Each structure stands twice: as C-alpha cells, then as structure tokens.
Amino acid sequence: MYGLLLLDLLEYTMSVEEIFEQYLGSKIYRDREKLLPDYVPGELPHRDEQIRQLAVTLAPALSGSRPSNVFIYGLTGTGKTAVTKYVLRKLMEKGNGRIEYVYVNCRQNNTSYRVLAELGKFLGIKIPFTGLALGEVMKRIIHGLERKSRILIVVLDEVDNLVKRNGDDVLYFLTRINEQLSNAKVSVIGITNDLKFTEFLDARVKSSLGEEELVFPPYNAVQLEDILRQRAKEAFNEGAISDIVIKKVAAIAARQNGDCRLALDILLKAADIAERERASQVTEAHVEKARNEIEKNLTVDTIKTMPLHVKMVLAAVYLLSRDGSTKTITTGLVYDKYKELAAKIGIEPVTSRRITDILNELDMSGIINARVISLGRYGRTKVIEIGVPLKNVEEGLSSDILLKAAIEEA
Ligand SMILES: Nc1ncnc2c1ncn2[C@@H]1O[C@H](COP(=O)(O)OP(=O)(O)O)[C@@H](O)[C@H]1O
Ligand SMILES: [Mg+2]
Image 1 (spheres, rainbow, N blue to C red):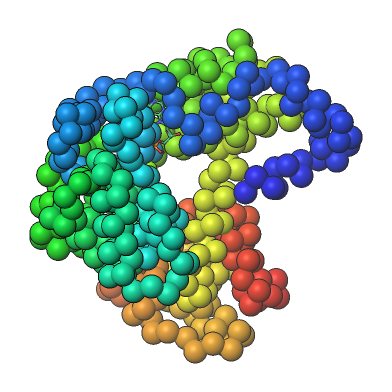
Image 2 (image 1 turned 30 degrees about the vertical axis):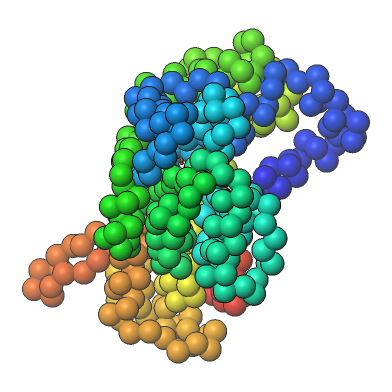
C-alpha cells in the first residue's frame, strides 16, 4: 500500500544519498516511530476508566491469587490492545517476576493449534509446527506451566478470529485449566472487535471468560484531538504540525466510528507525504492526499478479497456507470450486463435472486449505493450507483485477470 506512494515522481529524480539525507535531517519528524501502530505511548488520554478497571481486576495477582478472566470488547481503534499492554507492563514491573503475560494475536494465529503453539513457545516447550494432537499439546502446556509455577496471564487478542474458524476449544481449555494446576495459575484476557462474538461461544465458556467485562466506547472528535496532540508532541518537530491539521484528522476518524488507528494512520501518511515533498509543515492538503490514498487502498483491498460472482456483479455496475449511456442503473440492467460478462468469461451465471442479495451486500459495504424507487404500476426497482471513485473500483477489479481482460474489452 505504501509501495505506490514511494514510487512518487519526486523520488525518480533523487539520488539514493538525497533520499536518505532527507530522513536524516527530517524537518517534520522528531521520532516517527511514535506514530506506528505498535508503539504503546506513556499516556493514554480518555482511557482512565478502562485502565483503572483492568488494573483493579488484575491487581490480586500481586498477592498471589488468580485474577478473574476478563473479556474486553469495543470497535476497532478504541484502544483495547494499547490499554491491555499498558496495564500488563505496569503489572509486570510490580510483580517481581512472579507474574508473566503472554500476548497472542489470534488474527495472525487463527487456529487452535497455532495459538497453543504460541503458548508453548512462551513456556519454552518444543511444539512442532504441525502434527501433534491438540490433546497432547494441551498436556505439554500444563506440564510447562507447572514447572514455571507462576501466575500467567494469557491475552488472546482479536479472539473472534480463532473462535469463528476453530470453535472455542482453546478458550474452554484455558478457562478450565486451573482445575488441573497446583503450582501455576492462569487467567485469560479475551479481546474482540466483534460485539456479537459471544453468540459463537458455549454458555460455559461465555460465563467463565466474562467473569469481568470491559467495554471500550468509540472516541469522539474532541477525545481524538487530545490523543493526537499528545502523540504529535512525541513524534513531530516543534511547529511541524498545526492544531488545524490535528482537528481535521480527528474529525475524519470520528466519522469512522472514532477509530484512533485510522486517525494515526492518516497523520503518519500525511506527514510522510509532507516529508517527501520536503515541506516543513504538514498541511490540510497533505491530510487530504493521505486520506484519499487510505480510502483507495481500503476499496481496492475489499474488492480484491470478494468472491468471483460478487466481483462480476460489481464489474457489471462499473461498466454501466463508466459507459454512462444509461442514466439510471436498475437491477434488471445489472443482471443483463452480468450475464453478458459471465458468457464472455465462460462462467455459469447465478440466479437473479442471488444478484439481488449480492447487490445488498455491496450496498452494505458502501462500494455501491442502492435505493428503491417506485415505477408506478410497474412496481418497484432498485437504482444503483457506485459509491466510491470509479478508478478505485477499476483498480480493485483489475487484480482479477479474467475481469481485467473483460473490462478492457468492453
Ligand atoms: N487513548 C489513547 N491514547 C493514545 N493512543 C491511543 C489511544 N487509544 C488508542 N491509541 C492508539 O490507536 C491505535 C489503535 O489502538 P488499539 O489499542 O490498537 O485499538 P484496538 O485494539 O481497540 O483496535 C494504536 O496505535 C494505539 O496506540
Ligand atoms: Mg487491537
């Protein structure tokens, strides 16, 4: 996603030395790393309540008792991961080696086996990349824990990815494990962005994981401004960023469910653009460019991962919009165009009923906008338009070789 930007025209005219020099004597950055997603800042404004609650829940570990399991939920970018790591680090500092924690991201490790293998690795147990039965891995983990005789806090971040794929066996195992331990104790912190995730859980797992629950509400624009100001202070040189820019970035992210990750992403990208243009300040125009770039990447990535027939329906809408000969694009027109495409590519078309469903899905994703209009005595139909820049849709569809050819020929 970054690659395209780096091929900026400007850089074609610069020598390697010049490119490197630019970063050495940065006008913009004091410390760029302070904006990266994995950096946990020393302060987390507007999360005092969550930090306090998590601290209160985990504190019993300091006197040797097992803290309650915690279930944390909230939308993306509401600070769940950052707060958890922040509190756990402080707890480690006070724990004098009697408490440990292991962090597993279940999006990267999205099978039961891989999650357990990560735990094993942490405990210093050899677990082959594949091959052992889960039960055997579990047995070895119990041994490993007993040998350590510590309180171990297991953080399963984005745990919904694991459960949707492999069910809740690992959660069941970990929330029951204390019955089999005499020297060690285990607590689980489960984190999810998916608010409806608990529907996938067995009632027993649900109640043991949810001994404590912590909700992270979305940030509003003013809160995001405070957060960005504080991160900007660490990352930027004096005068490299203005409050107007901070406010603009915060406002954009506030409209996207208060996603702080998006806010920081835009800020970083805007500052990178400013840096490359050798500007001494990040401006609103840089923010605009960064935002377009990020939105484009989102659209393109979303389209790339769509199933073929969804892509084909989108391609049909795209072709009808691009050609511009039809003012109102109706479901019927889309279906005809779709069948034409299917014939061209040599693929069996799906039913018009399914096309209606696909159009609804595309509408939900925001890539198209559909509204129902009345045709008087002819009933009702859907009128459809593309909801994002056409060239972004084209780029996304073109990643599919079949569709690329079909679009170019059409
Ligand atoms: N209150 C805050 N103060 C400073 N940075 C924050 C705050 N909340 C979130 N962030 C930052 O925003 C990004 C997203 O937060 P993260 O904890 O990863 O969100 P989540 O896990 O809820 O999706 C991270 O870079 C994080 O450091
Ligand atoms: Mg997270």
